[in-house]
Length: 310
Image 1 (tube, helix red, strand yellow):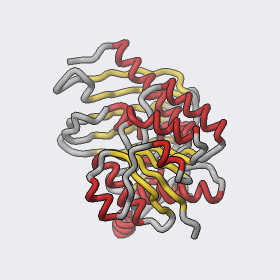
Image 2 (cartoon, one colour):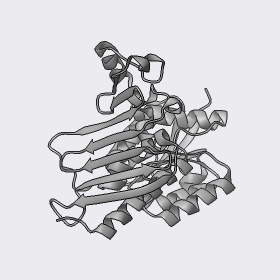
Image 3 (cartoon, helix red, strand yellow):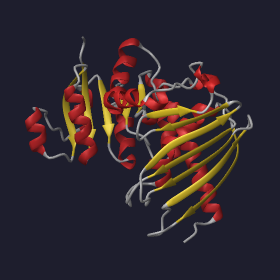
């Protein structure tokens, strides 16, 4: 197997998670790290720390960026300028203009750019065949416990928005949204209703101060009701007609086996390697993540128009 030389940019626990994963995978050789990680961790793994982004990028075949969204743009831009493949944590930026700049640079560089796959590689969802689905109503909830530093829309809801656009395959016709501030001046709970041109209606709720973590998609179409539990990697349906490979059914034993085998980060990085080596389309392309980011900001605009409830 040909190893891919990887430059890693990361901060804190997320950077350490990526570093541990990349060094454990036979597909990659981590040639250097830039970030605020404790140097003793790097020494233990025999990874060199760099102070110059340019120097680190130039010795790599590909770059992995796992930092807060506000810090990722400049590194991503420098990576594409140097014609290196790029894997970037989602949301990949917090600015639509920056997102469009990166899209333009990717087209010119003609390299692979993949964003963190998020829910797409969750076993509960990846067993489904989105191409066969024509949902008429979708209910999504993502509740997190005591997470004041998490953005309700750009961290929690954006994962569901990506799946929603994949399932509906239709243009957005109407958005309504409201938010509640519980502990401060920024939204703690957001609800949005989205209507699509094909008639599908979706209701999404995200909460960063929930008492219990919840993350699911419940979708309905003619003769089929499907439920996807992302936290437990389980998928169920309530229709006999769903047994035609559109909605898989698993026993509890199979559910547990799938959960034990599931590692979304490993699978996402393995997919990145495969796309580079085989010139295939990324699981989550920059263009798809841009669409999700754009819709996220449309929801934010609706909330600002309406005003936040305190």
